[in-house]
Length: 100
Image (cartoon, rainbow, N blue to C red; front, side):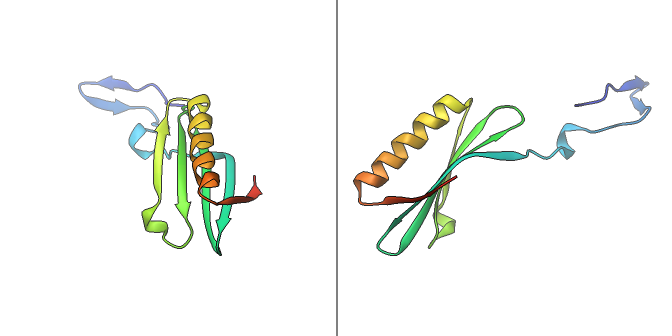
């Protein structure tokens, strides 16, 4: 929540509760699958933030730097994309070992 700013000749008066640049974008996990194949693991997960935007992230545990994140406007599209990614991984021999 943002406080209204009362200005006088370009100056801010009153108490500033928060401003957009300082607010953290907190993501809450919605769905997380860990898939394994031949001793390697990949996490495929969905997170949602306060604006209801969703991130779908794929994280290979052996090379976190090659992770990627796709952003979506809502959970339905993110769920669809997660299902597509998980299906492709499973078709390539990965098996789901943990769900959260």
